[in-house]
Image (cartoon, rainbow, N blue to C red; front, side, top):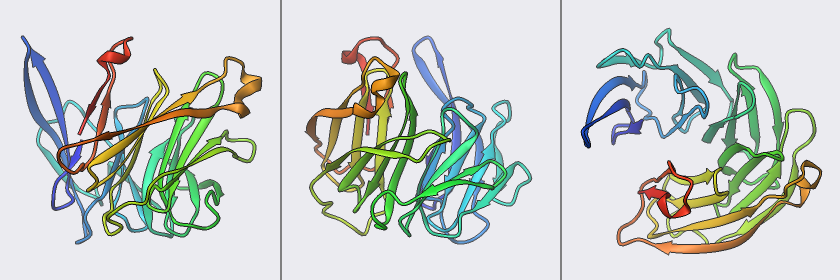
Length: 256
């Protein structure tokens, strides 16, 4: 899935035949207004569901028919559910464990909704500062939530479940972004090797952190990121995708 310069969402299927890769357009989703889509997130367990946000107050949950080809719809189509958050949405992600979607909002709130648009939970992770990134992950010992504020200058790690209040385990402080007018603040987490990736659109570098995960569930509250590395790129980043199809860390790929 990708967003073009007009903010239109394009969903394509990739086919690999004898090492040749072909791409077919499955679905194009256009906005019903002039405001372009800015964020897109696949459901981690159900590849028929994708979430999109425009940077305004709505989330759109799209049901994707992978058997269709070259379909074109807009955000009012019957296959799309709309959730009105009531504040500017800077990022969204899906919960791995339940049918919930997490939103990072400009008013400083993390708001979590079910797929019917009912508010499930909300809290303020960064003392009221705008939240630019949110990512939910399921680990063997706990569910965690990663949040970013100050244009991803501060990244917080939370022990998070649907019953109790989230517990902040650690906050990482990064150098400030050189361009605070962009709308691309990205975090990604590789659950196989427990690496966190942080990158901002327009920057010539990205950060990688390793999460030290305890072996016992009872020790979940002592999880910490134990080292960090900064990588530099020849050209400014727009976005990145983590590809990990191997049991070896050497075969992990970060596509920018």
